[in-house]
Image (tube, rainbow, N blue to C red):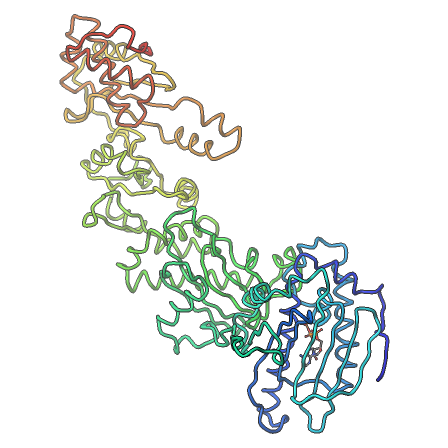
Length: 635
Ligand SMILES: Nc1ncnc2c1ncn2[C@@H]1O[C@H](COP(=O)(O)OP(=O)(O)OP(=O)(O)O)[C@@H](O)[C@H]1O
C-alpha cells in the first residue's frame, strides 16, 4: 500500500467544500454520475475507433444505497483508471480543480454557486467522512486499484481485486448528511438531475449482496433518449405530447411546440412548448429547464432566455452556455446574447408560420397565445417587429359566429376612413368588459365602428406601449365618449334646443353624487341616442387604472372620485316635457333619474347614490315618500 499527501496550496479545502456548498449538497450526485457518464461515453468512443477491444457488455450506471453501512455507491462500466491515472486525475487534476473552485467562490454569496459546474469529484466530500474508489481500467491486463481518502489531505492507494472493468465510488455518508441515507431523498435528487442522462441509470435502495428475495429489482430512473436529442423528422406529434407529459405530468396538453436545433455558431437543442394559459395569473408557474449535454443544470433560466419566453415550457440543452460562472456574467456573455436572439427569432418565425398556414387554429388558440405575444411585443422590439404581422385583435361580439379577428393592417383596411380621426390616426375602439359595456359597444357598432376586446391583465399596459410603437394608432375605450365623439373628427351636430333652453337644461343637471366628479355638457345627438350618456374620459381613466396597480401613492390616486362626463342629448324628445314641467320637484327628480340611469349603465351608481335612485324612482311612479327610510339625496 502506498500513502501520499495531496499537494495542498490553499488551506485544507475539505472543510471549506463542506461548509461552502451547504445550501446545495445535492449536487455531489450530479457530479459523480456525470463522471460515470463521461467514463462510459469515452469507452464507447474508444471502442468505436478500435482502441478498446472486446465486448463492452451492458453499459449502465448503478446507484446503490446501504442505510446500514451508511454508504452510497456509484458504479459504472466505463473506461476505469490505472494507478497512474488515479494519481494524475484524482490526486492532481481533480484536486486542483476543486482547489481552484474554492479560491474562486470563497466569500461569495452561497446562492450564487448553486447549480454551477466545476467542483467535480471532490464534491463527494460535502457529504462524506471517507471516500473510496475501486477502479479497473479498460486496458488489457490492467490491475484494479483502490484509493481511499478520509477528508484530510492524506490518501492511500493500493492494488485490489475487481471483477469488472469500470469504477465504483463508495461514499461513507457523514452524520450531517444522513438525509442522503433515505432512499426517497436520493431518488428525488436522481430524478431531478439524472432524468435525461444518456446512459441507463439504476437505483437500488439496498446493496446487492444483502438483497432479500422479495426486494424489488433496481429501477431505471432515466430516459436516455429524450425527445429533444432526437431528429425532428423522427418524431410524431404524439412523441412531442408524451415528452411534455413527462416534463409536466399535471398539465393540459400544450398548444404547439418548437424544436430548436442549432449547431452554428453555437450548440443548442431543445423543445419549447406553448402552454395553455387559462388565467393570466397562472403564467410562470412552471419553468423551462436548462440542460448541458443532458445533465440538468437549472430551471432558473432568467438571463438565459428572454423574459417573455419564460412563459413557455420545455427544455434547452447547450454545452456552450458558460454554466460555471455567475449570473451577472451570463448577462454580458456574447453566447448567451446570441442564444437569446436566436430563440426569439425561432419563436416569432414559428408563430408566423402557423398564422399563415392555419389561421383558424391560430385564432382558436389566441386566448392563450395572445398573452404571450403581447408580452413579447412589449418587452422585445425585434419580436414586436415580426409580431405586427400575426398579432390579432378579437372583436367584442360575444357569439362565436360573429367573432372576428383582425391584424392591425386588416383593421385599418376594414375601418377605412371611418375610424380615422382628424389627425389621420387610426382610432382603435376597445372594450375591457363586453358585458358591462354592452350598450356602448352596440351604439358604436351601429355607427359602423369595429370594437375589439382588450380584457386581459396585460392589455392596459399593452395599449399604452403600442401607442408609442405604432405612432399612427390611438386607443379609445368604447365608453370614453359618446359614440359621435369616439373618433375625434371635429364634426358638429345641430341641436334642436335654443341656447337658452340648453343653458336651462345644463343648470337642471347641476348635480353632484357622492364619490363622483361629474362634468355636464348639453349636445344635440341623434334622436335615437339615450337622453343622457355617461362616459369616462380615456386619459383620466387610464391614469386611475394605472395608479390602482401601484403602491401607496397609487392607492391615493386610485381612491380619488371617478371622473364622469354626462352628455345630455338635447335632441331627445323627453326634454320638451322636462323643460315645460311646472312642478319643480318633479322636474328635478326626473332629471336626477335620467342622470342616474346613465351612471347605472356605467356601473358607477353605487351605495347611497343607488339607494336614492331606487327611492326616487318609486316616488316618481306615484309611491309615497317614506320619511326616515329615505337616505339623504346626495346633491
Ligand atoms: N467514474 C470515473 N471513471 C473514470 N475516470 C474518472 C471517473 N471519475 C473521475 N474520473 C477522472 O477524474 C477526472 C477528474 O474528475 P472531476 O469530476 O473532478 O473533473 P472533470 O470531470 O474533469 O470536470 P468537472 O469539473 O466538469 O466535473 C476526470 O476528468 C476523469 O479523468
